[in-house]
Length: 350
Picture (cartoon, rainbow, N blue to C red):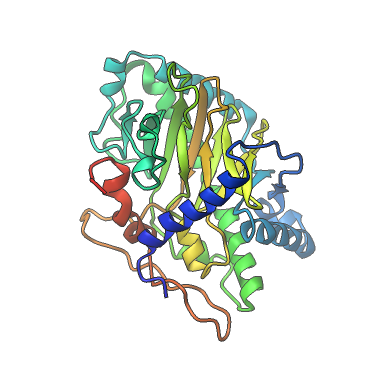
């Protein structure tokens, strides 16, 4: 059994990245990137069992290979995306002093300035230019907390757009997790309740992060966000520009981000809960992203609500088929994330 996943995944990521870089460090276009229509799961009464099963089979194929795919049929209107991007650009165009008024001081909620976080603390590249992430962010939790409510003046539109988008994402998240549950049931040959993967995360918080990757003079050859996989269950991403790159079939590919599509990637917790069946998606934001790029990753299941930060929810043990030995320990998104959190916030020396 892999007893220390927080040590296993950085090593695994480094090995996969090194192998991909040996083929080519540059990402290439992917003309056949998987796009899956999930509308049958959002409106099950309007679809047949066969149609929903077809979606499950598509998700199972992608989750067990590249660990990611794009979705359509999610029901979120283009007008909301337009309002979201416009409000984000307006917020990020403010002076640094104004934006710092929305900092919580812990890098987890509110505003974080450019080059103040460090994914490189986990996966070091050896380049001094890449030790801090080339992005600025504003994060808001779901459900919102008192820090999220620190809104005043002309940022009100930004806050409202984020809140509305998070609300609409809830039905998308529920449908995706039902699809993953069905995929896990089919692959393991066991009968899980239809809402199992959503139910085990009941009352868990989510985190929406508005990220601006600026055109940064002096860093044209630097990767804006180093290779990593997300810590939690799944991440749902909207983006105004391409720039996201990932490893599929052993090499780097560009992820197409067409209007109206959302990107779904598998995190490390789903890899562990599926006993390695679902592949944690390894991705980066590459140097090819020349223009300012706005993205909205929504990190589902950041841990269950608790007023006591020392309280850990139990999580679950890996879901195994008959006779299959568990490869990972019992884990929850919160307990897994706590091993990393000081590193990710740049407060550790590791």
